[in-house]
Image 1 (cartoon, rainbow, N blue to C red):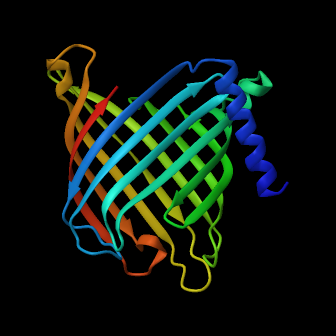
Image 2: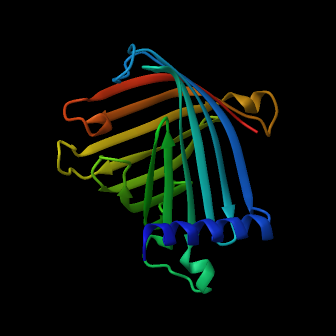
Length: 241
């Protein structure tokens, strides 16, 4: 099946789910980040980022999307986004696709876009049941990159671990992206980004989720450029609506 057919099938399935049934749950948040050790083909190492995120659990899968607005591109401000609908094979088949820690198997897709480029990822994902984890998933993708950038393969891990210290609520969550090396100097790339967050919002009201904390990004061969490594800690504030 061609990529366009896969993308169209997943898009139609996701659209049908949104229009025919309300999300089981959904969440929208805004995050502000500031760091001083970004490795970029840009103007300076300092960067301010505003991130808008939306995630939803659906009857036949899930959906996650975010958009980053940064102030450090060569041409000035820049917007980068990802939209990731996944279709649950267990839900559409009516069967429990469980084995060991695996809770479900899904068709996984992602659309990455920014200033002048679009990448399309498609493959398979699994949801995992791991003690103490709020969620954990692994997605394996084939990546159709834009223009003259070689196509590659990518593994993405996503996770969240809530915990308490006394009466205070904390959350550690993040992702790890690893992609393969390809021809024409396209180096293998690894981006491991984790956020450590303290919910100060509960001191405003029991249902308020206002987090303060830090984000740590370890990015080897950034943008698949060999030797372009980043190790950056950013101050973080995040509010969930």
